[in-house]
Length: 451
View 1 (cartoon, one colour):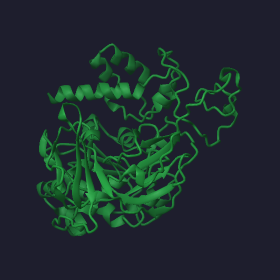
View 2 (spheres, one colour):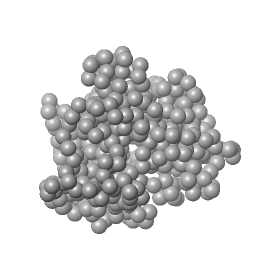
View 3 (cartoon, one colour):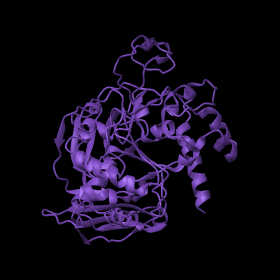
């Protein structure tokens, strides 16, 4: 790719909360897990159908389940061994498939591609290659975050190489040693789209001075959430025709490229383990579907979160990381009662609204429990959610239209542009689950469009 001067993207809104327990940049190799799990229930908008049963022998790359909406989209095993459990939920919906890892693993082999040949590969051939390698589900289509149809040609693709959360894997660790895979992945995305592939890094990133600087098309300035691929897409898109663009992060692009160059289903993954309730702090090289217990010791006063601190999923100590989850955070539950807390000056309490004297300590790294510190109340129209929304929405107005079941007006106000970053929920003094409510409304729109 020719050297270019990156375009500047300035995200004026957003918010960066400094929390204690951020992961160190040291990369450690995790021990091989005894079991791995895949979680169909955590993949949006699919209708999973199991292709294996308990006791079946599988290789790395053996199809475990498919999407009934499009059987071409299959999800492969991240380990070789024996299917230990197939867990069904309500209405026999497939919830989890657990594979017990064999001592010696074999992998399904696919055709290898030369790096120089990817850009000239016919699109139909490349789509088929990504489908059979099980990496197609790494792609996401705006505005709903669904796995795109293989028949759809996106108007453009937006890639952010930076993490939108300090507790997620950082780009300098993820990209180290994976430059060839990243370039191959970007080349593949160029074949899949009818438009351009835009690649962003934060303006402060040291990678802009490395050999990867030629792949960067945009420099982002702003708070942490500005690094989200969805936020990048919102601020860099040129027209409404790009509303259905695809968005990816660095890890996903690397796995696309690795699958083509190596001819195997890529199972290596960099994750972070962090939070003040764990001593296992740092970046770990592990495999997709790794168990929580491999990294965290069980603590009765801790809550385990898989994924982003703001939007992650609560997991149990016996759980597994999902397809899109590259972080484990151990946070204090905060169940203890505070005596006469309402008359305390609040030096140890963080507040976005500066309601406590802690506002005098803006640069402090805060240790925050998961307690909500209050009960749900009606919206007071304070405008805090508007102040932090990185895509310039009016969340409080959208929320009112959603609650009034006015779908048309919600969309007119930009509901479909919501990236579900969770900032609006965090800063809301009325403890309203703003992001979840808007996301549920978006999902309803998608289901109506599909039916």
